[in-house]
Length: 100
Image 1 (tube, rainbow, N blue to C red):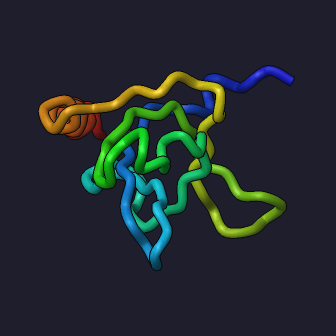
Image 2: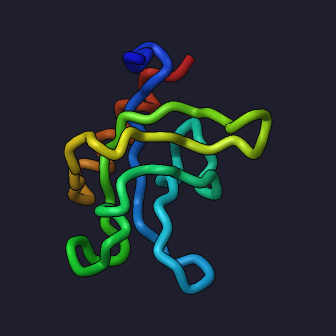
């Protein structure tokens, strides 16, 4: 089944250590809460590949599995798109200008 591209949107995320594990969460300042879980490629949480606190741009959608807790889902086969602090600032600035 093909992905419904209209359900997906760009989201800036970062790696954080939560409860002793590295997890990916949205960067504050977007439509999604920084506490929202993100399901994506495990490569992004690999501290040997990307240091803790690395930020990425994902193409993700908000979903829930059979009525469970909502989370962001990004396909694991998408390319890794690391973001510099300047990239994140620019992305969040464009997001704020585009809000209604």
